[in-house]
Each structure stands twice: as structure tokens, then as C-alpha cells.
Image 1 (cartoon, rainbow, N blue to C red):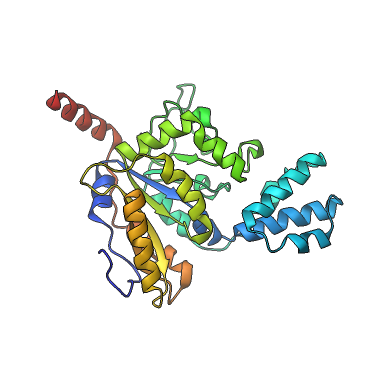
Image 2: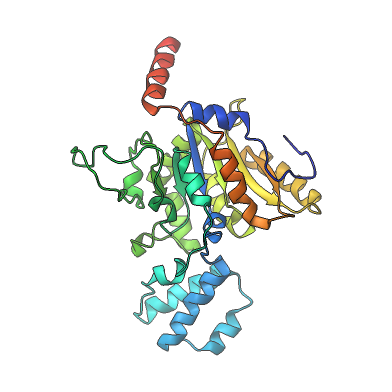
Length: 317
């Protein structure tokens, strides 16, 4: 759909995304914008909550919080973590800071998980894991025995990415850690730099961008710094087929902003923006889009996809 304007309320699914789904080669990256629809905090709210927790513990004062208020959210969060380490008062109750006590009734994750592909999330919450996917239980567990447990395996460490086979529909990978394992969480700029210099993470992203078609959801302005860490470490698409897409919303008066961002992501990272309108339901529109797309995406059998890939590799030899 390119740069058509004004943006539609429900954009058509790019044919490359449909094809990738049918071949079991679609990976969806899920950003903070999706969890915010459930009531999770923004980065700004998260940083403020962490600082207030330290103030309640007496590690800093509320006057300190006021003085820090002009700093970017990620910087305030880094300061909060540094203070907590120096004071030996770890901020380990991340669930209370991130997971809403009363989640909204949004069905966005229900629709998203029903697609039944592979999911990589930079969120710390477990909303995505908790939703059932198209293929349910009764498969073999990690010990090789049939399991009837609904609890999915938590994948949140770099060592788990090494040699990871992405052929189990509904698999969720927490690229930046999980609130269930606070020590796994990547939150500060130094942590991001170390994390994305890890060869296991780099190899994982290289394989994703080389073998799969990627759809990014929920990456707004607050998340674009995070997104660029990911994109800079992945291979740039050298082929003719478009393989990376980002679904993102714009207001009707933002045509120039959209045009600049469209060109920037296309030229810098081979990512094509798929835009939708924020004029009517703002970011809640994403739920409507996921409802529509989930009903129109058919994910193929990964085992058949493996067989086809093997046949094509043999034919090329």
C-alpha cells in the first residue's frame, strides 16, 4: 500500500506477510505499545514508579525525583537501578511495577496469539505467554514425555537462543528478559549494549532476519531506540523480497512525519512501514486490526515447511 494517505483504519495485510504465514516462516515482534493496551505502564511511568519505590524505602527523596523529572525515562530508570544497587535494596518486585493489578479487557493478545506463529517480545510481562495458541497442549515436554501442562516454557536468556529451533507454533521468546526472572531483564543502555554484543543474540537475530519474514507491532516513539538496537544487529535484506514490516499508527495531520519515517526505515533497515489511522480509536485501533488480521492469516504446518525447504536446498545443489 506504500505511502497512500490518509492512513486506513484497517490496512490490508502485505502479501509477503500472508505468504510467510502460509509457509510457517512468519515471526511477530511485540513491543510495549501492545502491552500498554492491557494497562502496562509506559517507560515514563515505569521509571517514575521505580523512583517512587526507592523514595518509599528512604533511598532517595521525592525532591530527588522532582530534580530528575526532566531526564529521559531510560536515564531515570538507569539511575533508579544504580541507586538500588548501591543501597543494596534491589528493585526486585518488578511484577508490581509492570503488571497491572486490573488489566483492561482488551483482546489484542488473544487475537495476536491466535495467529499461531512464532513471537519475539521485548516486553517483560507474561500476557503473550498466558494466551493459548492455535496448537494446544499434549505435545512433548523438554524431557521428551507427553505433557498436559498449559504452562509454557519461559525463554528469556541468551544461552537459550543458541541453536533454538523456531518450529513450535506459539513459541514466545522474551528477548529482553521477563518479570518472572528479574535478573534476566535488560533495562539500561549499558545492558542493551552488552546484550546486543552477545554473539548468541547476534546469531539469533541474523537467523531470524535471514530466514523469516518479520512483522513488528507496538513500537512507538518510546520504543524506537529499542527497535534500532535490534535492527542494527540484524542483517540488512540483500534480496529482492521485502522481509521486514512494521505496523504503526499515525494521525491524519502527520503525513510529513510518516513520509520521513517511511523513507528512513526503508533506506536504513529495509523495514517497510504499514500505517494505520489513530484518528478514531487512537492506539486501541491495534486491537481491531489484530482481530481482522488474525482471521485472515493462515499459518502453515512447520513440518511441511521444513520438508519443502529441504527439497529446495537439494534442488539447488
